[in-house]
Length: 438
Image (cartoon, rainbow, N blue to C red; front, side, top):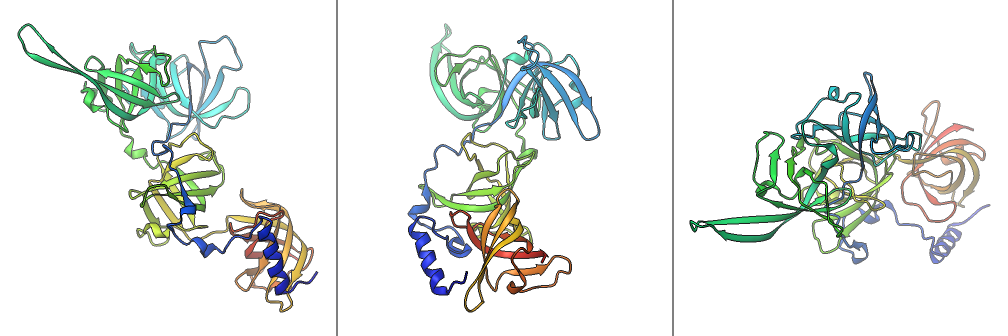
């Protein structure tokens, strides 16, 4: 089947009219633009929610090796021997702390028969019993029971009321109470007063309720909450945990920037979509990240700091964030640091050339490949345009070839960018083609 440039133009126009428009080239959005069509509403995502599960119970069947430490965890409040068991893995990022004062403990403190409260996930296997990785383990020590321990992050603090009481000697004592919203699996309002015992886990000293501030990580001790939404609790004790600066950038996501949007009402904030692959550290293939003036943007090649203009579609990036993501799909996080590397081939297809279409001047051609996708974002069946910019090489020798060297039924590995039509099969532009076998 031959087609001319005029035919290509007519076909392209037809695809556009039917809603399957071919996207513009990768340079269409080389940087942020003040286009109202790109603006979206930033709906309360500046305080992403903690995204994991929790349960309490007894440790059993502790197993350790050079590369892994895991234990079986049985909920002691249930008689179900199967559904209430879970196997938890512990890695270097797992926090292990005492229920008594929040001080850090060692893996050796997790023993058979010890009662703990574990925060894990959100990824959990479908096996019986299920398996997951522990984010935090609170080991029961002293008089403080794990059942009353509730881990969270303070997202808002407000003065609740101020009562002035005058004693017999007429000395004026001000009694203040604050309402602190703790972001947990269930957001909870904490009524905190001077009667609440507040301990700093780093020093072990009792501190003031004024040390409860936005962004502080805490363990709040309470058993009863109101039936309101959000519920209200009056904690008897609060332990302020370390600021976790040493782990602030422990979570990463690697992939290609597939979309760039300007946040509603903001001049210095963007939201980008990073399309990557799922892994044991990153259970989501796609994550949206907010970029603001505090986000550090660095070149992978030179190590130099870059401006926000370096954020471009199809750029290959590694994003560092604090591990907190919203519960939306795709989840949303705040980028602390972004390393931009040279564009790599993150999408591809390996298979057989099923059809070849050439233009009259033979400067451009189009091939259809059927096979298996390369990477999470590739396609099993795709049509690719080949131009003078397409790099074509022989698999065995590495010698550069020409488009005419690709024949029908040739086995190839083709790599392409994220600019594709929405048709079936999708149509894109080949960046590199490796000829495996004629």
